Image: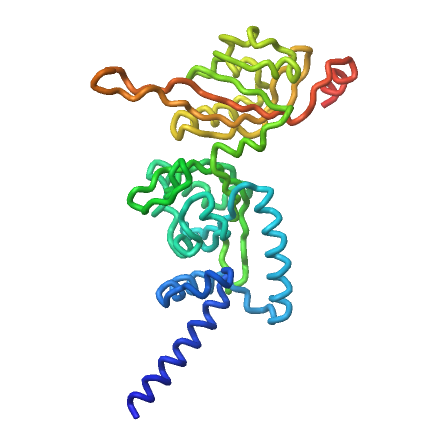
Length: 323
C-alpha cells in the first residue's frame, strides 16, 4: 500500500512539474530537458510577470503572434533580447542568446545580471535600472563561453564580451506584474555584413586624431584622406554632439569597444551629415622576455556609417540651413 501511494505521489508531482514547464516562455525542446530545480527557479521568476487575466485562447493567439514577430526582429537585430527586473534579475532572454554568448537561455534566466557582468560596470547597470528616464543606451561587459573560433568552453574559463544595450522601461501597475527593463543586446563588433557603400574606415590615436582614412571618405564627406591626418574627430563634429563623442571615447578607454550613437559630422562643402561610428581599441604587442615593452594600445579603429547621402549642391546647403 505504501509503495502504491509513493508511486501516486511521484506521478502527481511529475504532472505538476510538466504543467509548470509548459507555462514557461521556452521552446518545446528546451522544456523537455529541464530538471525540477530549474523549473522551480524559472517558475518563481515568471510568476511575477504572468498576467492571469488573459484566457487560454487569447493567450495562445498572442503567444503565436509574439513568437512570429520576435523571430523576424531577431533576424534583423543580429543580437538577442533581455528583460531585467528592478533588482537586476534576468526574467527573460531570447533563445538565440547561446549563439552570441555560449550560455543557454535556461542557464541565465532566473539569475541576477550582476553575477555575469564585469564588476566595473555594475554601477552603470544600477543607474540604468533606475526609472529616472524612459530610454536606455549603454555598453556593458558580460561573460561569454564562446572562443574567438566559435567553440564553447566552461564558465570558469569565460571571457568578457562587450554588449551594446538599448531599450526602454516598462512600468506595470497591476499587482500581478512587475516593472522591468526591455533591452536589445548586440555584441560588438557588429557583423561585417553591415558594411555598405555609405561607410568609411579610419584609424586614430588614443586622443582620436586621424592616422589613416580610406578613400571612401572623399565621396561621402568631400575630404581627401591626407586632409584628415593629424586632425581630431572633435574638430569635425557638431558642438552639440560633443557629449555623444566624449561618452563614446570614455567607453573605448574603459571597455575597448563602443558605439557612438548618432552625431553630426562637418562636410567639406558645407553643412553637416548624420553619422554613427562603431569603434574598437586595437591592443599593442604583449611584452615578452625577448621584447621588453609596455603593453599599450596600438590605435583605435573606427567604422563610420553615413546615415544620409551627401550632395554637394546649393539646394543641399539651403536644406541644412533650414534644419
